[in-house]
Image 1 (cartoon, rainbow, N blue to C red):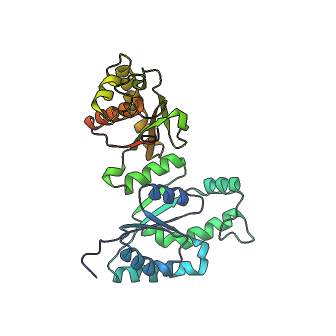
Image 2 (image 1 turned 90 degrees about the vertical axis):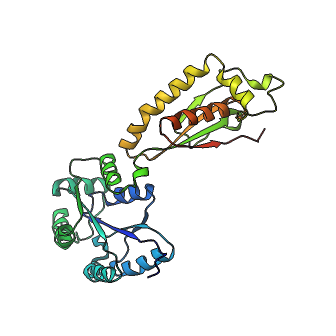
Image 3 (image 1 turned 120 degrees about the horizontal axis):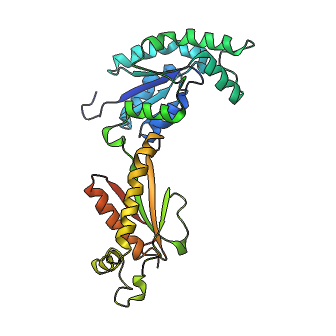
Amino acid sequence: MNDMVPPVELLVITGMSGAGRRTAGHTLEDLGWFVVDNLPPSMLPELLEISRQRQFTRVAVILDVRSRSEFQQVPTAFAALGEAGVVPQILFLDASDEVIVRRQESVRRPLPLQGSGGLLDGIRRERKMLAGLRGNADLVIDTTSINVHELAARVAKAYASPDETDLQLTLMSFGFKNGIPIDADLIFDARFLPNPHWVPALRPQTGLSQPVSAYVLGQPDAEPFLGHALAMIDLMRPGYVREGKRHATIAIGCTGGKHRSTALVEELSRRLAEQGVAAEVVHRDLGLE
């Protein structure tokens, strides 16, 4: 194998139907993993080769018993992966029979192995077929008494890179006259501050310039505004992460998105950086005037 090809971290997500495999997969996608759902086990070696060619470094595969006869190929596929130098990690999601029954009844979908029998018959068949993977699992998460947000948090804690465990922030300036950004999670209105547009020397400049920034930040209400904005972000960040949200956009708007909102976003970014919080800055409407 070419030494220049980065190693592939391969994670197999499996477990009981209704135990949260999809939630785990979606969480990993949000963390930057390449996730494949319902891949026949025999194709795992091929997926590994494709991942190496395209330099995917973190790949997760959701395996379950829907493939039925194909599922019997798991030991052979794992052996082939071992020969290729990769030992997959196994994440197994489990839950009690009673909880699985309740979840399946709420979605009104039959279990893959239910056949003409009842739900409990399908659950027993599935447990038997998955017993080997559960016994070899690197991590087993019992979702009987946890919700989807708690499951996502546990998956993130186990498989996120160190820089992905915190909320990824985007700070956006915009102009209300161009419409509210639909992707914003929190919107602040800066139109209560005096508008530099009405200062002839400042009108052609933007909030990126020192004179405009000094004018906006020098207003008596600018400091309390920034303080409240920082306090709100500090309050929301851990809560968002706890609830499984990894990205948040904080938007500040003024009339055109040229002066006040731009200067405030730049200052907010600077103060967050002083706290060790990195944020991407986007000036949505700058240049549209």
